[in-house]
Image 1 (tube, rainbow, N blue to C red):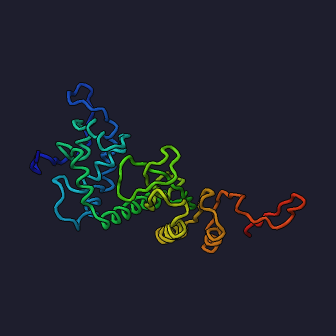
Image 2: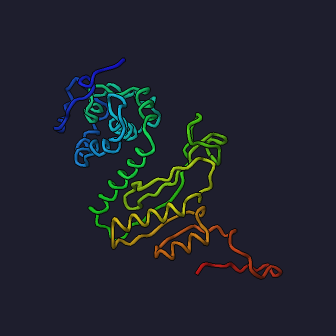
Image 3: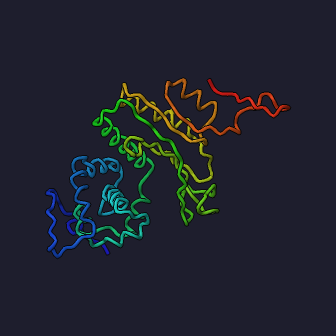
Length: 273
């Protein structure tokens, strides 16, 4: 069923006062905190610029669909179908500036129409928002955590592949590499990868790109990295040392060369200087 734009959108500026006796009940009153945050960040307008080059789309707009997904995650949901749990909630509608929420079909159809350029612009926006926060914190040292995470899917989604999946063996999945700020827990950037790649696939170029962009955005800040053993290699260690980055990495001892002492049961480990 189609609706007009005036039936879908509504303007909200004032932070509402919550009344327990109000008949318009909400299960998510805590979202009132995010209304002010979204306004202060100018999030809806900035999301709109990520999709400004696209024509058409749903009556909700690409930026509202993405903001709906952000709220969806804030509420603790993961599957699109779960949006039916709050489709009539007044606080969710107010936060999004809508009088009715998009259904599952609208969400999936609109996301399918977004192109690669939109994704890259959104990725830049995420970076900008995090860097703005870092500037406010005025940290002298920034710690970057690099780690991969298996994201399973039960269907044949584009870009998925069968690979290592500890929880759901044989399931298709993604294996993105995340760059996270240890001080704030914010995700700074993501390298999207299919589920059948090794942890180190594309890692070095991604790590160096994050280092370069962050040094350009925050000159004078001391950077340090943390990685697990999957990323360890002589080349990675030497590259980080060349770029004058402090780092800590778990070392898989089986990768060290056994250089002498085999007959006596002794082992000499070749250690990077």
